[in-house]
Amino acid sequence: MTHSNIAKIEETISSLLPDEDYRQACLSLFVESLLEANSYGCNKWGVYCYSEGVRLLVGSLIVCTVHKNGLWLSLDKQLLNEMKDKQDVLEEREAWHWDNGDWSEYKMVPSKNGYYIPSSKDLDIWPLLRDLHFDYIKKAANKYEQLRIDSQKKHSPELLVYLSTVLGQSIPCPRYGDMPEDNVLKEIEEFKVTCNDLPETECESIIQSRIGQGVFRSGLIGYWKRCAVTGCNSIGLLRASHIKPWKDSDNAERLDIYNGLLFVPNLDSAFDRGYISFDNEGRIIISDELSEKDRNLLGIHPKMKLRKIEVDHIKYLNYHKQEVFGRQRQSSSI
Image (tube, rainbow, N blue to C red):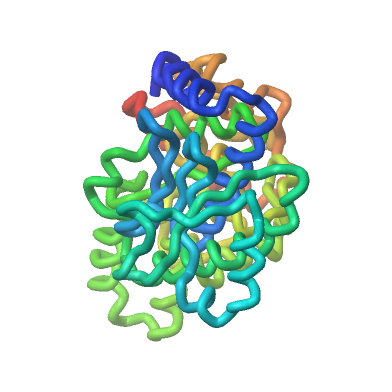
């Protein structure tokens, strides 16, 4: 990730959308779509910037584009056909027009596509468009196991940093097959070989804890209620992070809520890769390998602290400081 790449993204978007207020409106709605896509899996989506705009992809489909002609959206065709009166509302509005070109609709996951031009006088149609658009994202996410491999390679972390900076909010990061702490699917398969003596329900709970679902995540949500550091209470954005990595933990530790922290995505990525840790008072420790510029972009600062800490957290935090914090990483990890 380089500053020059972020500057190039900023230049491209500013040239396409020179009006700052309009640009902010389009980018904010784009991020709404991104967050919806992320709610169905962090391996389902990706974004990139190109000469004509900014794209969000889910599975094998482009679902949203910030374009000079407006915010291009894919709408669920089946739901649209069931809402004839809503179609009439869209037909009457200047802020919406259908795409009549090569990308007017999709067939694999049926859609009708068009352009929305956000404006103060037509904001009332956004809830309608959002319902049709979000329903389409859901169907696309359910159709495909993950984002296409070639699209994974096009995904731009720099674009996420740019969006986070200009909008002043945390943006989740996708995770694909090369997730931190080795390949998750490989870990799970290796674990299955060793869990034959465990009750089936316990084995399943442990596996679910590794993929961020099940009782482990539920336990962390019940314990922390919101982000362990920032207090962000948008539960759908928060990630369940093991303090002592899953692959290094025994079965009891894998399900222990004291071996977990609930984080916003930026903190989760930094903690998982050893760029940050926490002392026994809960105060943040920041690696020298994380530059001041990147700290600012990621919203990480020395005054951060865990909102609470108990004695049962200490052994896990000590392990993290000794075995994870400050280890060698590629500069492109975050």
